[in-house]
Image (cartoon, rainbow, N blue to C red):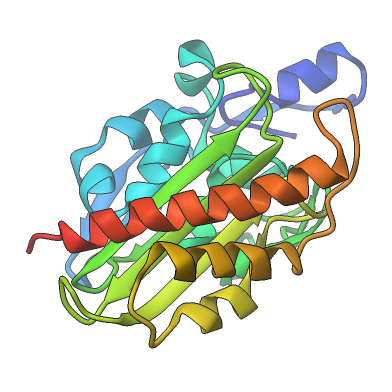
Length: 267
């Protein structure tokens, strides 16, 4: 097993869920803990970058806002100091914080092995709870994200029974691109977590938004459409019915915040 931050693996080993013959730390591999701006424009984020670093990095906060917010909501400070973006993705938990943010940013992950390397869109990365497309011989080395277009804004909202140290009951990430500060929506992305076996994009709701002028009523309808893409369950955190209500409410709220951020965009 590969050890990055260890916030999931070490717990599973203590519970004897995972019993690896060997544990290999990647903490000292050069470049895996780096955030590198690209001339593209865009950014390359090493797989061992921690949630704390993501939440405090000026470029991530300014241009990749959903990811910075999601990282700031992950666990408690001690967890954020250790948890890595690569681990949060590879664990493929339906309620994880970072996947929806990476999905609305159209991030791609670079997977490397002794045989070569390949790039995979985060939107195609997850196959089921705890299952992703990474092969046993592969290592995620980084994520590449293109900078959102001008007049873009994004946000992230997480709902849990507590404000901190809580697994999401529902989480939502959004990204809107406007034609101008008061123009119609020319691109929309909505990703939902903890509402299906994998994080998912609400493509129908996104298509509904494109070409329309932003409004509270429009975002309300998008939230209603988004529910149709979900298959939430009832568990100890909440009922299926409650989760459906929260998908509507949080999608609307997250879109409103994304709209505010898009209108405030600066070169």
